[in-house]
Length: 451
Ligand SMILES: Cc1ncc(COP(=O)(O)O)c(C=O)c1O
View 1: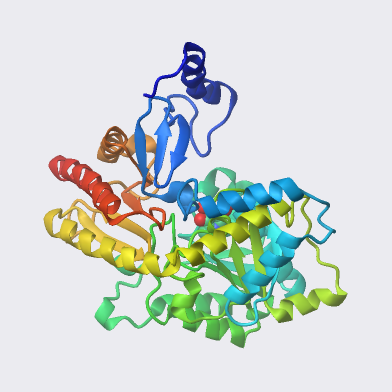
View 2: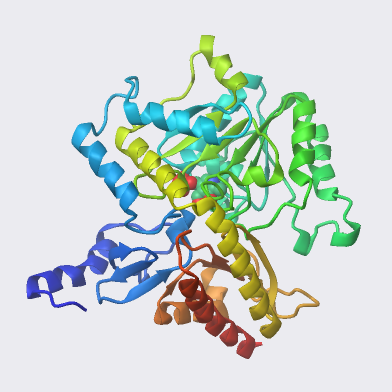
């Protein structure tokens, strides 16, 4: 630890206790928590109160796509701070207009108008509202293995089990479908004989639900916290075809997968599909200031030319956040980070293939750009998971030890059941990729010795 006075030492030591005593932590039973007491961060490292550096291998919550302390974003925020921080959302500001225009240039097809929100979940809420208003229909189709945020509507839309404790009062009208989970195909198809039963299933469910009652299908641009379950080639095209045929809107949630994370501005561009709305957050501002948004097609925007938009938020189009968004987009462009994500992602895939040759507990590795996930199994033939899907933390067994190894060795990343996520900030060096994977290898050694 650097030399600090006794008063500062006391302050540093009370960070953790003040946080635990006076604040609530997401998704956790509160007793027994031991959060990293983060004091500063730079590049791909977070430094704690003891001066220990933690390599950020998940871009925090897959949002800090540019890493920490990126000068271009900081300068954009500072410049804006001196001019104007916030005005009533009915006023026009320079950063809001410029960011909207920039997003219209980056988004595919005719998607050209953005309603700005505070983050991802409320962007999903507003996308659902708009879809229902535009179509006059009420049903929303989403996948079981998906997460769209934690507000009531968004958590009902997601199929993630985080909805279970609150689903007594869920948003009506959401219908979940099976995922195109090729590693554990619900239809027992093999990649070489795949008949795309997964896409046909979605179309069948829509038929049963009555297409005339379905407002929208919501899917992530690329799956994230559910295990990076990649869409098989052609899947999203099929979904686009039958949604268009029935006048159903396709809403693509790019909250986690957007802004370079998957080697494109929007992951849906990998599938060459144009949706009706794109939901954004996280990488939009690279996490520096909270902001989300819904980018809608010209047709949807036109609907609200004469009908009032049924959406509003105090902080919609917040000037400081919009400046951060513009700064982040500028930084992605000047650092060529969209292409970098493709290159570094290919390198990570090669390195993980080497790990998979050594560690039989790696059942699958699914990665797009720099959004990747290892799925660990006890046995490659039976595919029995090292920890069951949705097992409570008390039953994570060896994965808890793996998390302990990561913490001790100075690696911060996401571990969930039998998944280890690999999604570092896009500017990470190859040396730090190797370092992070080296620490993950130590965790894998521990898993193998437990089998
Ligand atoms: C795909 C996706 N959609 C929506 C959200 C919700 O975003 P927020 O936490 O900003 O509300 C998340 C958050 O992880 C996400 O991954």
